[in-house]
Image (cartoon, rainbow, N blue to C red; front, side, top):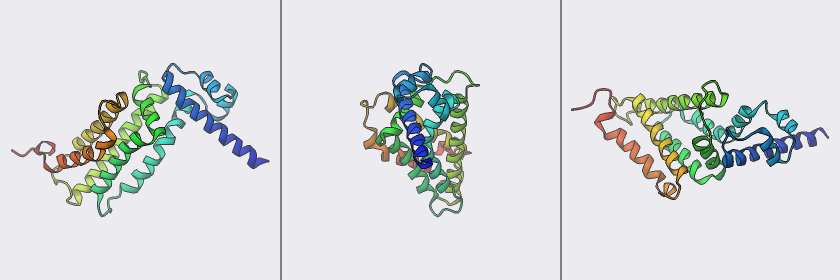
Length: 214
């Protein structure tokens, strides 16, 4: 009986998260209430509060379903003793873009975060979470690039901070544009070209160095 009850609770939690993604995607995060989510999940508001403290907690759990695989990849690749850190960096970038374009659940969450979530209150837990993820993502990218520089795979005078800013801007800029208008260009077909051109730029451009070459 206890096992059955636990399985039912997990099933209910999953149904609530699925419903939240659907309603957030349809109406936006700020315009969605927990009552809306409860109705879409066919549960009571009490059932939602049993699993989640508030809407911010629900939003956080919804994002975790997509973010956790990426976190596992970061832990695996951010190794200063890795034999080929540049290829690991490349794989991470490919993974991010392919998840957003080929995985329907991930794509929906990306669309919610990029286009359906108003970040206007710096004290809002959702705002705080997004800001922390943004900064942590840049730190992880910078660390991978530093490892590649140490291995001689990138120029020794490459500015890893500027390069990390550019990578983050490229990935999220492209995802922002594509999720806003997916028919405007074929991102799934060009994912590899986007990432490889970024790496080529780091290897050859004199303008991403700590002291630009004349």
